[in-house]
Image 1 (tube, rainbow, N blue to C red):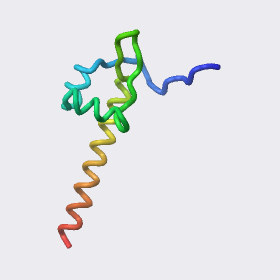
Image 2: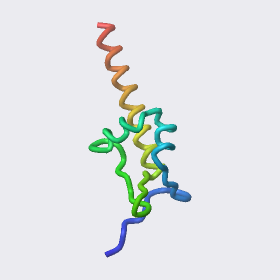
Image 3: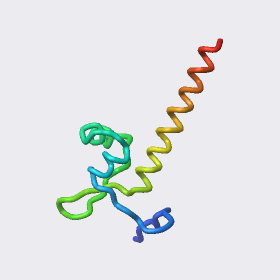
Image 4: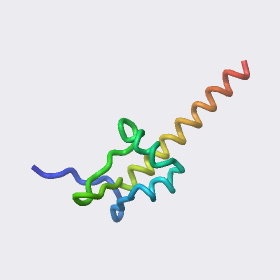
Length: 81
């Protein structure tokens, strides 16, 4: 059984939690709560270390931005009526 090829151009970068907090602006607690269902799944790096694939975190952020902006546009359209 072979593993699926990553759909990432260039080197794969694994982010540890402090970097994820810095990039997203979220606290450790919020990220831990988000990982239960919405945040990119963490991967095991070693027996005691986990991280997230940078591209997956960036994709998650892009989706959050798009969702937020579309909600703002929808909300603005309703207010104009």
